[in-house]
Image 1 (cartoon, rainbow, N blue to C red):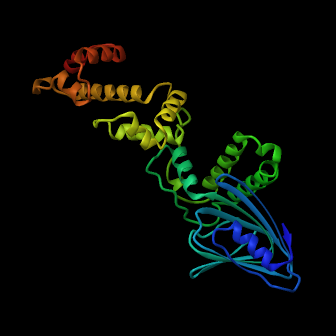
Image 2 (cartoon, rainbow, N blue to C red):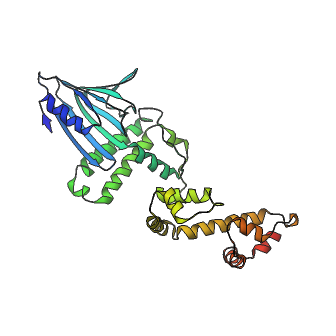
Image 3 (cartoon, rainbow, N blue to C red):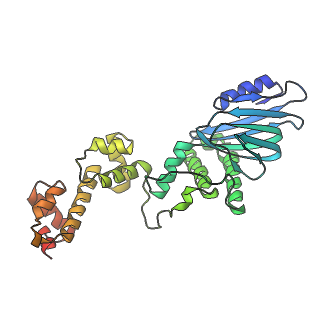
Length: 311
């Protein structure tokens, strides 16, 4: 879109940015050129304001993480008592209400849905309790700034800007993950407080990881497929499919094997001279059929539960 009508510019931006309030000169050579592309939680917005003009936008607290940089002119951001200028160095935009003023500027802004990025970071780290926070609004170093800029340019030109590429769901998903990975790596924050899973570790998708954590944390409590699926934020049938795809088993089978392992650990640690029995440990972990428990135990560990207890 290109317009020299300040009213039209305000209307267009008001429909694009959540509850935006726009000010622009009504005369004096004003011209605004905009283009934007959205792919689910990811969007890239570009704007150019003519050299002799300005555009002032007030934005309510956004639901997205926004990152901006300019290649010409000035972009000044004001949030409360804080005021900073965006340059060619990419910067994170405030999470609260802010006002930005473009003065003869060329702007590129990438946004990612904050909730999606939070879940993606937790999935990468395999930490359900992870909470994403950024400590600085600028990249960690020059390499990080260059990597971020190169990533945005590639996504803008070769992926989101290609109608052919955007036809494919896998390409859109990869673009989203690439943008989020670049953001998490490039900017200082809590993501860098943890080591990612090792090379040999299995990285599970978010829903399966949530289900596994839920099972591990509630192992001694009555659990059914419905409760596990709710914790994973999937339907029961979707959860079964996801477990088969990524773990090669079902949620029920995973639960039973995990409880069997808990019983094994208790048998190793127990002292039979204190009256501890195989039956008591089996019942603690939900195994009411003692002969079946013994058979499954022998299959997994190559010995009987009684021999483990007394060894």
